[in-house]
Image (cartoon, rainbow, N blue to C red; front, side, top):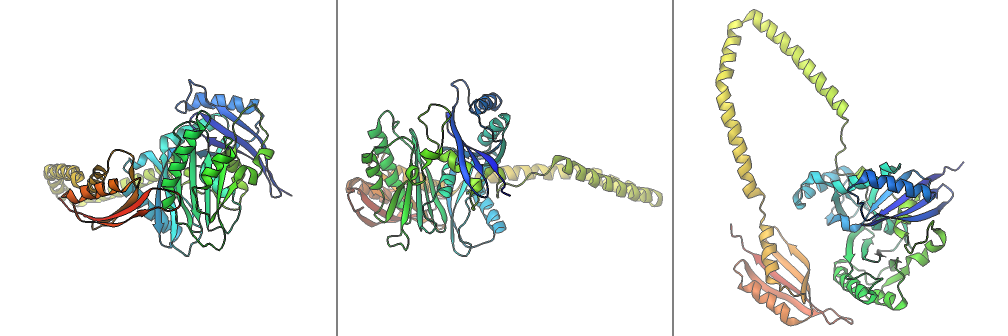
Length: 477
């Protein structure tokens, strides 16, 4: 007997929610209906109760019946750090990432919720993404869904889930997903060791209003992101890019996107590859598409788990029940009072004088204890003057000042070792700007051993110049 479940996939955007309902069973997974809930102009996610009631009305009017929901957040709401780690068990990995989160995220960690992408191979070095989102934003979205009468199972990333659910080949050494919306795009890169890139790409103009400017902006941002991807030029299996066209690109625009990638990468149109247009019936007249929401709705039917889940994070500690904590403290206090009562009773009977002496000593120590506590507070406060300032920040500031404000030269990678020796690499539209940055670094007393490692063309049809500069940052403390 097959067990059937209904799931709602909610892909969150700034001004709307894309919704897909699926029916999942052991025999077949199918999409039943889809809809687009556009937020009214006078309502936002900051009002979850009011917005939830409106969402509930929309779901009933559009005949959505599923109560269990998966929520996907946009990449714009996420903070992503790439990590390279040796083989380790899950518990040790979580502890390592907790320490790195405390070290690398400048915000108050209590205001963030963390999780990390899973690993495909536990016997080799791992490439994973440590991802955070604002606790307040996640709570507002979850509260909106719950007010609408939904049971939220997970909160994840829309584009990561889309990349994981829809894959043309299981053995591809490189799998890349490009999710294109009218005002933005999201790019995800994954290889056999795991995810190693997720990026929000803002478009200079809406594709619907000025497609040429929007596509040129997308092309330039892709070219700047691609050097961070480790391509395999001679793969055993073909590397693949799946692009999800949510705006109706013409053949010329699609051709421009294909030219951004090496010839070893096969390009697939996700909507044609998986025939989503034929399987998603819409409940209202709309030009929107629902690829991300469909990926969320179908993910519970996949063999692999979600890439991340902020609602059930493997990093954030699980909160204990307040009642259980109160009972535990009550038991501890009760036992302590009983022991103290018995001790005081026997001491009072056997040695009243000793109790008086100890009480006098305790009174005399109050001033010393208060002075010690005051000193501890002062030392703790002063310690932040030194521990909170990292030499890395000074190095990044001086490097930034060496680059001109015009957009003719940009950095694509920075390697900085603990001994403050580093290599900065990037691209430029001409050699003059590269030499200008080199001269500024040599003239700056904060740097020494500054030398050019290489300066060469990027190849193919591009006129850009690729460069790398080696340097040592001097300790001025």
